[in-house]
Structure formats: structure tokens, C-alpha cells
Length: 232
Image 1 (cartoon, rainbow, N blue to C red):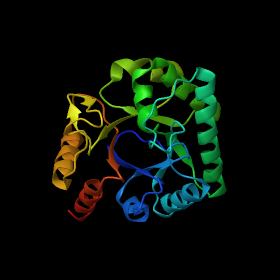
Image 2 (cartoon, rainbow, N blue to C red):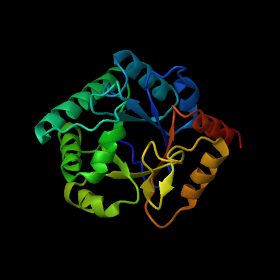
Image 3 (tube, rainbow, N blue to C red):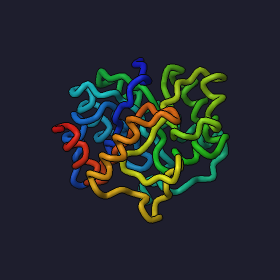
Image 4 (cartoon, helix red, strand yellow):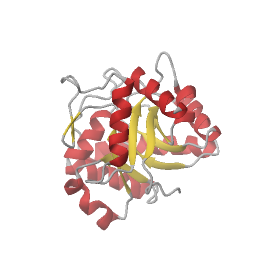
């Protein structure tokens, strides 16, 4: 299991069956691939293809589970009890880990997708369930969480020994440390140079912990920004 803290790594959500599909172009430009597990996007074929791309490019592999909401790309919240949520996400991650093993790859972390990610940030019961899933599957898996919310997460590493990866977004708008909700003005940054400036700002940010910076593969400006950074 790779230790992922210490450097602000670039991560990207992949395996989401987008049209056009830029995964093969993006993956050499990043450090961590959050691969869709079939909840909001993806199937066995896309998971295997993306796992293999990650292996070929020495990119760290993470599971990217979601509420079962392909129609809305994982952006609806589900009112599930802890057992229902456990079974749902456990099933996605365990199957993804099995595909990793079959393809000579190692699963290193879990990054919840969409509304599940935000629920993990704001709902203690969801966070506890995500930690229970890691303890059941592999205690060494890290959990990607939203940076700047240390109060909500401070007991996790102490009480569970689960490594947390504090994440910010290069291509999302912020109000202080809070992500601007989708649908609001400046929620999504759509200019490559603006995204690069925010990326560089977060590279140098010292007031709260940051382990990884996300660029989204469904944002053309983010792909352009990654290309510019690669060639700088």
C-alpha cells in the first residue's frame, strides 16, 4: 500500500464513460486515478480498461463509488440506513478491488463521488460507514475527504487509524474553504488559466492541510490546464 501524503498529488475522476473519452490522454498527466465503480458511471469493461491504463502509467489507483444514480451522475442524495449504505458501497469497492487484483493492480484509496462525497463531509453517519467499509475491506486503504473541514474529521485518524487524504479542487469555485454548490455562479471554473492559478494557489496554501488536488475529466478547461502544466 503506497503512502500518499507528503506531496500535493494531482488526482482525476476517470472511467466515467464520457464522450469523447479522454482517459488515455489524461492519465499520463496525473498521479492518482479515481475510477468509477458503477454507481454513477462505469461497468466492468470501463473499470478494467482504466485500471490497465493506470498500471501502464504507474498511476495510483483509487475506487470512486457513488450512490446508484447514473441518470443524474451521482448528484442525488439517498436516504439510506447505515446497513443499506454499507452494503451498497462495500459491494462497489469490493468488486473493484477484485478487478484490480485480476489485473495485477493495487487499490490504494477510496474517494466517494458526487453527493456521497459531500454527505461524507457533512453527515457523521455516512463518514462512519465509509470508515467501516475500509476496516472491513482493508484497513490500509486511505479515504479522500474535503480539505478545510478538519473539525469534522479530526477524530477519524486518531480513533480508526485510517489515513485521510485532504483534497481541494483546481476547477471548482470556493467561498473560503467551502466549495460553491453546482448551479451557483462560479461553481465550476471554465478557463484553463484560471484553473492553473487556483492550482498554484493551493500548491502554496499553508493554512490548512492539503494532500491532493483534483482536476475533473468532464471539464475541457481542466484537461487543457493539465496539458499546459505538463508542457510548462
